Image (spheres, rainbow, N blue to C red):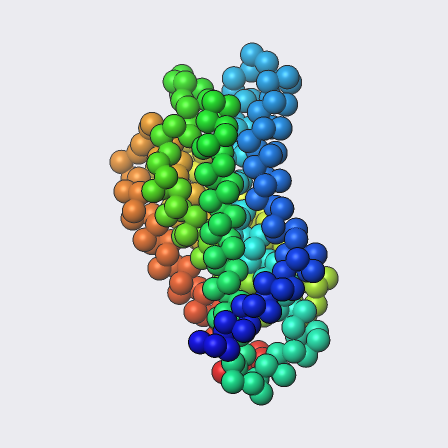
Length: 268
């Protein structure tokens, strides 16, 4: 335990010296500013009277802010692992009592906590500060989206959403040879992460929604949409069922990618 406490102290000391860490520190507040204040203000000015445009824009921003928290933290952690590989620090770690596996697990756990806090800032911040701005017209009904969102739901989704961190990080670290390839993965992966946006379409409101389930973030995005929108389909699962399936799915993928990462680094 002492060796990990020492590693935690080191991470905390270097946190504010790392540009990537500073970016992630400001990222949730930047997203909250954009989605919670700037976007609604812009829509009030530019989409006056066009309730359809306002509704679509606000729903999209809501899904984006849910989907991206764990993904962004996972990419940044993946870049950190690529730095370790470039600097051959993983080889040095392998000779210490911590081991590469222990170091990887520590970094994943550390980043998971940061991602959870980030999700709480973004989603909880929207509820606290922008509830009056997230009022949409959906199927002819005026809905205050965030009023229907409970704090228990926000915490659970923040936790499950952060399971994206090990999955994304270890895929980046296992497949990219350097940061340039890592950036390419980030751009390509960002497109796939947006697939749950299709759940907003009526075409994916029935059983076809589960086609989107190939993307892990569907399983914590869809239940929040079910919470905030007062319309449901017989094919919808209970809130907890989506999260349970998503948790199991992402843990399985994380274990598999962890094994691939360890194999590529010839470490235990």
